[in-house]
Image (cartoon, rainbow, N blue to C red):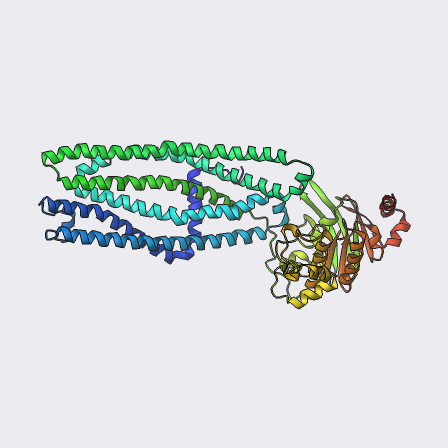
Length: 602
């Protein structure tokens, strides 16, 4: 069963509510004060119809006497109309102040909980292995972290306060009604059982609809993200109309599901209003008769006509907040499902520390598969000594990039061992392992930020002087100085504003500034012109000096001077040796070299 498929709506609700409670526990004091102020505000509202009743009794020369107040030894007989007016004025002012403080506290609570939850979601997502991102859609992750968390915020800001406040108000009105006049109370509550049955039916259909809405919204966001990211390809192949048709279909599915929710509400809310009006009609009918027969004073009937909408309005608001509640529960279900999805690579419980790494790397009978049924690497073994320059060559899909991903421990191997200076990398903290490795990848990622932050990767401990030195060393300083704001120039998404070769130079500056023991180049000179390649080759020589270097080579002519070449084919090592040695063997490497030489000669 899919983790998002509810086995039992009631069980899932309880589990989710427990998890939500854990989120708000750090803010116990704010919750306590919010609830107290909320209850005070609701209690003050209940007093207003009583004040109106007392005023009518005074005008009608009826002694002010309420049986349940006698238990508190409160004598109301001396009250005058002006006194009641003053008391009502202060009640309204106090109720306003209670609402003001309650709104501020609940919003403060909601924003703090959302801040904590977003940070927790982001950190959890960042800690996942690459296999998690291979299976996840970016748009759906954005929906979880941004939109679903915002939906949950509405629960804290309005949902919880409405739930507690309205339930308290209903209980107060219920008790006062029966103590004031039990016959009128029975009449006013006659329609309540029918409303309750309607709420049960409403809940059954609304929950399913809200879950579907959240799922379809995530799909829409995922499609939007993929489409906008791939806009260049879409326009080059003239697929705008096709993509627009697909989006309209996704949008239609969301629209239909949303309309289904609207239809459910269009049945329910008029029904609530109908029962509320019917309750008042019954009060007028029976109340008029009992006033005529002298069984109840007119002031009681008028008080009940105030209490009746005050009783049904919270019921209506609770139903309206059910929209917020169900959206929040649906979003929470998605959020907690993400938090419970753990594909992270765990750090060792007792890691090796304080090691002075030299850069010796060894693969021992390593096998790995992205999918269990399809091994990418098959029992491979090789050694790279500290300071050696080693090239990995092979056709596309042979497993070269997989090897460097495993060295960084972006994935965990299935079988075998990867040894760094005699230590299994599983016994080294990921952060410490990755601190001694720098990578320059073929597909350079540029953040929508300044040139400086793209070089330092947001490390504020790196000085401007160090940034400039790194840029000069890789010959990026000259093109940066030509930009309007130099190192403060803001780049567009994925580096819009500079050329592909200039992006590569920034990637070399990143690798240079972090001064790692091991440097990896994953086809860093592919897809660039020969002039830029010459610059980059010169940069590579600077970077690999006194470092262990692994070069995933696209052009075999660029790796003639390395200490060792490892030839990989279909996840297996075919040959190992220098360029000259491998050409003499007349094996697989020589075939690749001849094929590339012939292709370049055409």
